[in-house]
Length: 164
Ligand SMILES: [Cu+2]
Image 1 (cartoon, rainbow, N blue to C red):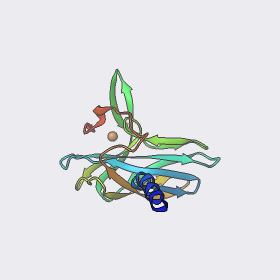
Image 2 (image 1 turned 180 degrees about the vertical axis):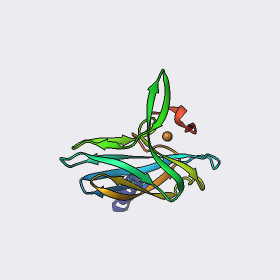
Image 3 (image 1 turned 30 degrees about the horizontal axis):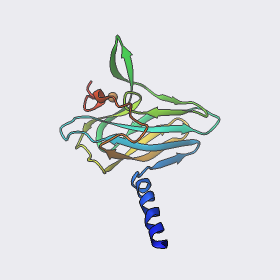
C-alpha cells in the first residue's frame, strides 16, 4: 500500500517538474520565464518573450537588449494600423512601479536579427536586458516549440510571420 501511494505521488509530481520554468531577480525586478519559439532553420529572425514584474515603489525602464547569437537585437511592439497588425521598434519600455509588463506574441517582444543559426527546441541562449535603474541583467532564453501556458493568444498568424 505504501509503495502504491509513493508511485501515485510521483506520477502527479512529474508534469510540474517537466515545465522547466525559470526566473530571475534584479533589484526590484522579477523576470519570469524568458522563452523563444523554435523557428525554421532558414528564418532570418526570432523573437524572445518574458514577463517583468516591478515589486518596488519606483518605475524602471528597459532601455536595451543584446545577445551574442544575433547581429542585432531590438525592442518591438505590435500596433494596429488601419486594421493591419504590424510591428515597430520602440526606444524603451516603461515598467511601472508595482506593475508588470508582458512581452508576448502580438505584444512587446525582443526582435533578433541576423541570427547565425536558429536555436532548436530545448536549447537556451543568453540575453542581456539593460534597465535604467536595475542595470544589466543576463537571462537565458528557453527555446520551445509551443508557447508556455498563458503566454499565447492562440493566434496562428504570429507563427513564422515575423517580417519587416
Ligand atoms: Cu518584431
